[in-house]
Length: 271
Image (cartoon, rainbow, N blue to C red; front, side, top):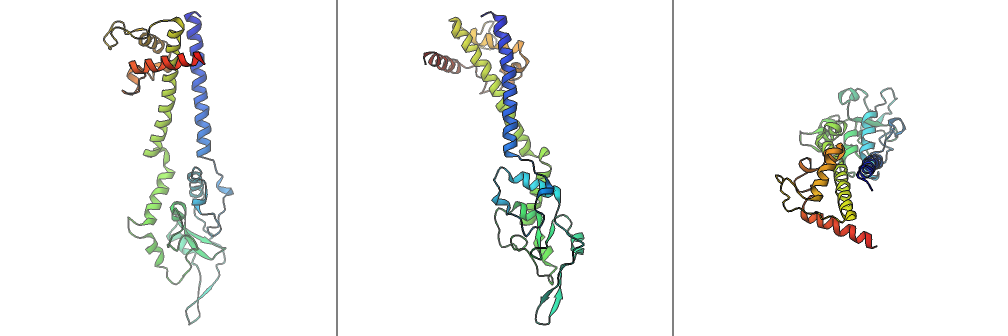
């Protein structure tokens, strides 16, 4: 096979590899980050499934959708009265509380109880907090709302921060790390494909891999490295991920890597 045909085929394979990698990444992303329409979610907090019952890969999508939807606050509902104490005092939920706690306070018509949206979204399981689970309905103790919020290190505020971070996920450190991981995997695949093609070509031609002097200052680093350099100079996708652009211990250029590639290809030919 001529070099022109070889490198033309190599260029096409690189494009197909990158396209396939992108499709795999998109498919994986869909599995772990499903799209949810907020309008289809059950609004009443007393009737919702606990967040921990959803698949772990779907929870952030569910959380994000609920945050986009906002807390369930039926302001114009005719809240029922409830008797407290021995003196037959009747009390009911005051819709003015929605204005005091606009971002997290919710009301369940089904249970006539108040809930916390933040804590629903980020409490792993129902605990002793009355604003999660069965809800809070002691309307004569309005101070319990502030007690629920608590100090800066309270579980409510921890849940609030997690909600804020989730909605700003693209700017979060975790998101950047995740994107970097996907890029690293794609770069490694391109680098590995280039290394395999170099090894396959040399094996097919019966040429030695190693050079007498493979240091960076050498005028001839050997067939394997020189061919990889040639590929990187003539293929932008390979150039971006090889040699100085690769991590120090992940260049796929060491003598051990060359031997490993040779052995694997020889084994494949014998099968």
